[in-house]
Image: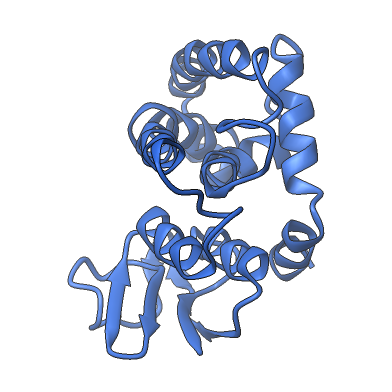
Length: 202
């Protein structure tokens, strides 16, 4: 059984969603935040002392998107395709981490995560401007196909949508990107996503 350390109201949400999509048995070892963004206790199995972390037998992993690639690899196709499409999954997963997430978080911290008195509107605006440029890339790709790696949902879609989930849920203006909005709606309303969201939003 997979053991996911964290809480659904964190990046562990992505891993819970991946386990649900894969149909693999898992349990969540609850570990949240005491104040601000500090963990309520240390997580010794992750040398970065962050959540999530995954235990799968003797294997221990950190980094949510890497955990998701591992989970998808256990499930195989269609969640994790083979051949060139597997390489495309890696491409989009790294894109989510390097191109999208830094700007998502810059916007999010200053739009809704921090207490209102600590938010800096100029930082939120700068994050949005940078993220909009990346969403324009995504819009162009989704004009060519319904999902990131072709006609079927894969862990590439899960990882990118997982990174964008907080923005989607918290009022980010997606009107200039209708294909991204429709794709996010499709991804985040899949049955497995809804089960994971129930843990986070409930």
